[in-house]
Image (cartoon, rainbow, N blue to C red):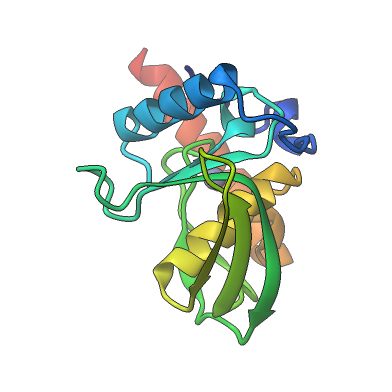
Amino acid sequence: MEVKIYPDNILREKAENVKEIDDNIIKILNEMKETMYRYKGIGLAAEQVGILKKLVVIDTKMGNGSELIELINPEIIASEGIYDEHDEGCLSIPGYYGVVKNRKKYVKVKYLDKNGNEQIIETDEFLSVVLQHEIDHLNGIVFIDRMSRIRRTLFKKQWKKIKAKEAAKQ
Ligand SMILES: [Zn+2]
């Protein structure tokens, strides 16, 4: 799997609910997990690999798999408070980090695990932000959309530089 890079149009699409957790879904989740680790990410939504299904993998420890969470049809069902301003990054916007406004501090997320059992995560830690970031992807939202207008303008300039640097390397 290759990660789709901003401004790829697929990042703007809405993902569909998974209706049946079959072998294909399990295979996609496994490949997503491998892709996330290969790119050294802490989260990956299926959209980012070009698949419009509500699937997300997260590992905030970025590595040995012990913290791996695989979410099918995740949905935020409650949220509260404001997470302090902080930098976010994204595998689809490599090399750029920016401050996102108004992330929630606490979220309660409902999802299905691989066995089709309903699970709930409640967190007010870093994982909360990762969950919001990944679930945004499923709705066609990337984190720069949530930055202030000034930061977005700066982003466009910086992104051009990042791309130019990359092009020079090749
Ligand atoms: Zn992302």
